[in-house]
Image (cartoon, rainbow, N blue to C red; front, side, top):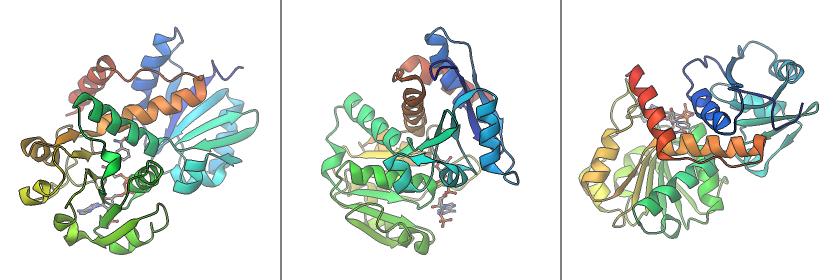
Length: 287
Ligand SMILES: NC(=O)c1ccc[n+]([C@@H]2O[C@H](COP(=O)([O-])OP(=O)(O)OC[C@H]3O[C@@H](n4cnc5c(N)ncnc54)[C@H](OP(=O)(O)O)[C@@H]3O)[C@@H](O)[C@H]2O)c1
């Protein structure tokens, strides 16, 4: 079976809620291919490497990986992309004739979503000013690595558990770590503020960022909330009200998927309004 026609999957536990099948099957249909991208649950108690070998035997050529398996996937690979190696997690697996190659497209997908938003709003180049990252979980790791690779001059990181933020030291140059309570005074002069915590998500408290803290950002800064349920979080509402450029989490979700698809099919699919609208309609059914 060639890499351009084999089966694809999203691996997780649970995984039935994932929107990845909708996204990838949309792109497969546009290429005239059957909807061969499917959810693939793997119990964390199972032998993860063995489960991947069974997938290869069953004709899978690629898979995305989501919670809770990204670190297990990292440990199960025969080869890793430079980004996956640095992040310490894998979100994209290619089954290459018995060998497993791991990549991580989360950070580059995040950067692509910022560039798309900046272009659409004719904003300033976010790469030129410091960035403030809220959170120090898996998503933050990928984002910090990508911001470092993009040449952002300073990356300020705050997290509720400061020790977890300290553990990220070295992921990029010019990182500055501080207490969670310092977030309101660390926005000064930043061109980018990104919330990578679960605050603001359905069922979670809102992220508190006073108006004055948003006012201290550069004019027309990018404020991104990678949470996408709800699509318009209180942070994004406040961002737009204060004249900044709000970037929702669907951009990252779609762009990281496009980069994975390109790895498997050799062609970057379009991230356009039609697909975004389809995804929003699907998310609305659940709300
Ligand atoms: N748009 C996308 O494509 C995309 C991709 C990945 C993730 N996400 C979203 O990003 C969020 C984080 O994902 P993740 O995988 O990084 O999760 P994670 O590894 O579990 O990290 C969760 C982060 O949220 C912080 N947090 C949780 N509750 C908090 C609270 N009450 N106050 C302050 N901080 C709190 C945690 O701080 P502590 O360290 O102190 O616990 C940690 O920094 C989720 O909402 C997820 O859905 C979106």
